Length: 146
View (tube, rainbow, N blue to C red):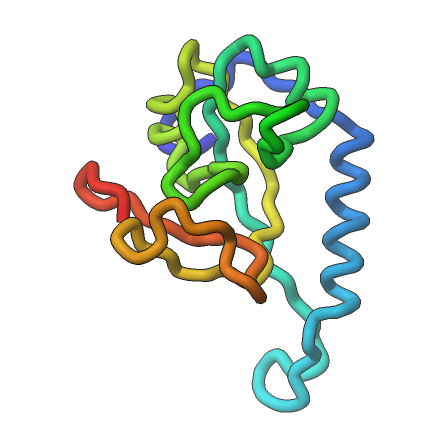
């Protein structure tokens, strides 16, 4: 378990896990296949372990229906519009996820980040996902979001 955090309660949604690996297989099928070099003939798409902190009141909806991009009608943001607009915010640091959790509900998730756009708060704050990219990649440095 990451960074010495104690695993207290754990559960998984089998149906969502199956859908995740089906999506991963589809991404692998579309991934470029290197024609030379050490990875010649091997398709790859990155997997990431990420954490999502949320309120206890959101637990059941997320467990039954997955993380969803807020649409303002059926799924609402509970905090704000986010640094980079509407979206699903995760972190590779569970401590940061716990900081965002209102009452310490943190999901450990597998993610398929796809093609990542390296966003900065100064340039991209409030801007929707960049065309041609699957996700934004932001950084937290010394307590300042970049």
